[in-house]
Length: 530
Figure 1 (cartoon, rainbow, N blue to C red):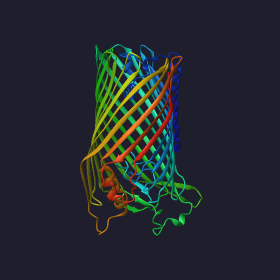
Figure 2: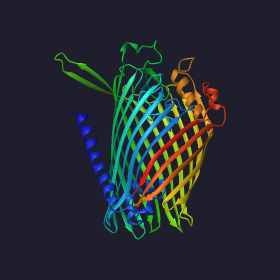
Figure 3: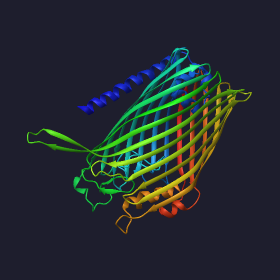
Figure 4: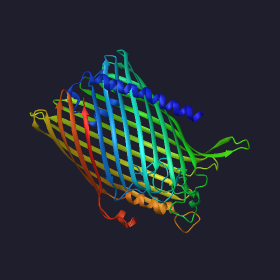
């Protein structure tokens, strides 16, 4: 009954948020204008997160996208797919209802197919991160296909009842489903998430000062089944389930069938903003406190044939995250610039409630700076420059297996795009970008605990992932788009191709089966701006 209530509350919040988003899209379609079409992705994200900016710099926009992405990873972190295909629908925008009310929203629907995903029986992946977030999970070596679906709805309202007071309130709902399709063991993962957030600020002249907060609650259930339960035995190594706790601390996966993760936490912070008719600067701080608990569920039938469940709170993960950011938007002499600088300092630590010990500790620091600059020539052809810089540092320790892994890295992406006018109202845009990843410091210390041999997880996951992260990489991406304007609506048919290469033999020396080929991603899609 408790779970039914939670699921209902999640969908209720998501439904209310969705109505706000759809209303904003409908209202905006009544009064469109083309001055918002060429704003950058960075500016769109900043404005959707902070619709109150429209009180100082009015700029309504709405974008709807339908695209597909196809990828092949010849080298990768182990717990990620070898091949993937993603199909995405997204609609987002900002609209000012009147001088006192601005609304923003985002609706995303995603369907993803993954091939050859080994060593993980949850829906988390290491495609874009070095570690599975919660180190308590089940795994089996055998690779298999997965199918995922995800639905996200986000909506915010900014309200300025009087000139010196600004309020902003938002909600977000997220539902996802994931299945392992073609091989035992076969997990089915359902995730429900919601967030409620807001900020209140006082404004005088060009200055504003905000206090803000957020509450979030996540629920994830994983039901693992076998077509043939008799095959889950140690002699069938490829499908025999293990339970992982920490980084490389593995156990036989007894009572694997039904498990749940429950997360709740809060965020508080502050923000200073400076606004004029053509400049926005905001400087802020957020503190995130979250605890994710892992439950093993036991089911039994009583003598009167009643069925019962017992929830065992087995382990937990506590996250402390401090983040600082600076957002900058500026229009000057025909140029539009958007910039976002973020710094995050994260500490994760686990705890086993049954055995009463802690063994795992993850420290991460990340500094990212994203920039874009857009301007037009005398033919009304747009130029766009992009520059993203990043520095990261992480350290993972697990005393139960005597593991200590350290890594720091620098990365950047630079790109340029140019429009070419074909006929009035029709343009062709061509872009090129280049990326580079360089490890700066790397160290991998492991001593088998009470054994002369490395355990399977260290051999098959930890060492190959470290080899991937400690190998320099260089990438090249090409993009092209055909754009045409009709009745204050812009249509864009776009495509892109990206390749990523390794620049030395570090990965090949560890993963001897690597074929030497690059990773590739191809995208194609239709975007509508109105």
